[in-house]
Length: 295
Image 1 (cartoon, rainbow, N blue to C red):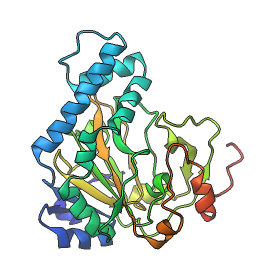
Image 2 (cartoon, rainbow, N blue to C red; image 1 turned 90 degrees about the vertical axis):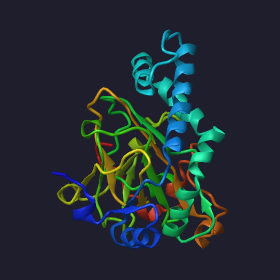
Image 3 (cartoon, rainbow, N blue to C red; image 1 turned 90 degrees about the horizontal axis):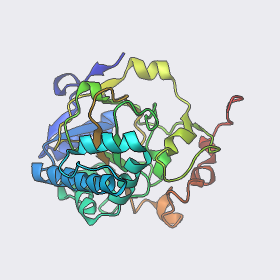
Image 4 (tube, rainbow, N blue to C red; image 1 turned 45 degrees about the vertical axis):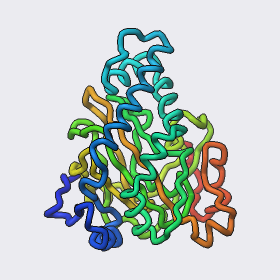
């Protein structure tokens, strides 16, 4: 059973000025939450940009009368028509200079560079960056996993996870296992039903972990509000909860790797993208286990 997190019992949260303390907590726990790192106008602009994209897509597919609707109302309407319409918005969002500006926010980069230990970062946009989890949509619900396997940048890459609107408990909080970032987990792969670009890359990878042990020490991270950022190691085991509310969970999750890491430089900065999803087998065959008989 998961336990709600708090700054007092986990020593997990720091102010936006606490760079050295953040590094200390991060190295020990694999995760640190920085409060108030992003200004309200930064988060608000990102959400409004996303809302305009959703409204444009709704109008294009014949859903009328929602030009001034909220992002949550628009996502629900698009999802009800065809969940692929929401994925269209996620994909175009990754191409927008407005979002590049968010992912290169000075505060984000300051902490990411410190936590990764490099003044030059690699941030791959093909996989991740934006998550929209509509109500009761289990298709993209992640079980326990590590982010490293989905990007294959440096092994000490950091994910910056931050919501664009409040996430209530019934919306499915981020669940983490502090201290689980010491080694890469082995996985089983099954790509037979995978279609790149549909947001289901995670379904092809099954992590070989002790689920009972993870759940016993799991923490439900309910201390992040818009403006706060959870930074966690790409090897930290974590999962998402199912959204059982009537609003969507809207999160940005850019990942920053060390662009000067010798192993990454040595392979010419090759990493996993939508069109190179076989790189895990090529670069890390030691992480692969044979598929189960039922696969």
